Amino acid sequence: MPLAPLPPSLNEPLYVRLKVALRDLMGRGLKPGDRLPSETELCREYDISRITVRQALDALVNEGAIERRQGSGTFVAEPKRAEAVVYFGSFTEEVAADGHRGSTRLVGAEIANAASHVASRLRMRANQPVWKILRVRLSDKKPVCYQVSYVPQTLLPRVTKSELRSGSLYDRLERTLGEPLSDAEENIEAALADPFRAALLDVRVGAPLLVLERVVFSKSARVVEFNRSFYNALAVRFTLHSKRGSSAHTPSRLKFRNSLEEVSLND
Image 1: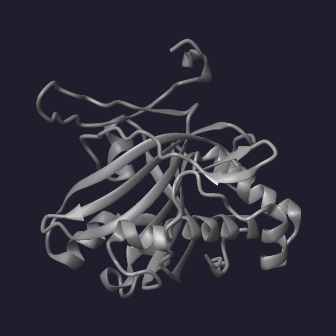
Image 2: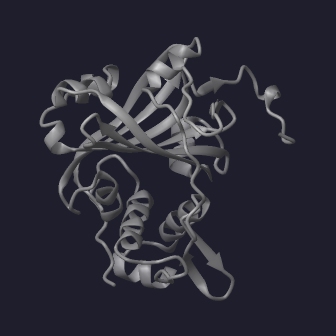
Image 3: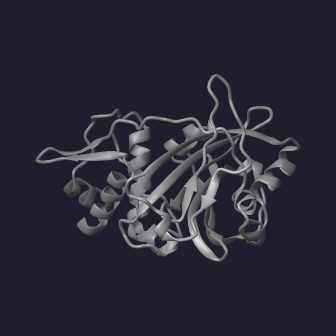
């Protein structure tokens, strides 16, 4: 299977772009247990250093997307078990519900061709144009989340950096669609911070992260956004309210810890 080209980006380092290309490769038909190209093959095909290749592979291992087998190579990992989440709202709404002040630092926003794994979640064809929006979310001026959002360009023909920095993306999408956003499919998993995300979140490399992956639907069941949010696991926790036999709703899932002393390794 041919390798995907490195996606162009003015905002992400080379190893992150390689990671996206490898996710695209896996999304084009590779199954759990299939072998990925070796480090040597990736260095040769992309004309990049072995250090860059290892950074990309390390990030994918930490995210649980691939696994290394001693003496055999790198392989697509088995998918993680999915757990249902029963409520979603904007980051600002969730922070405010917990008594904190939310803000956003825009890292970058650009039009990109949707890689296969992004296109599949947005239910569109690969290589169609999407907005790729990179933001750091802050609570009381402290970074707690790095978020990558993908929105079909047709839903945001024009958007300013000011809107992305201080406005609500969900409010803007609802105005464009003329209907409310009604529900989302979410997955939560664990990962370790790579150098890029560690710098954005002001944590050490290898610090634990909670990764929330979300696909958002409008009232008419149109897919309007796919995002991945990387939370500092030592700063937040998600509260999920479940009821046997039916769904339940809670005003806020996101709870902020007052200090690291509240974290128990035995929980």
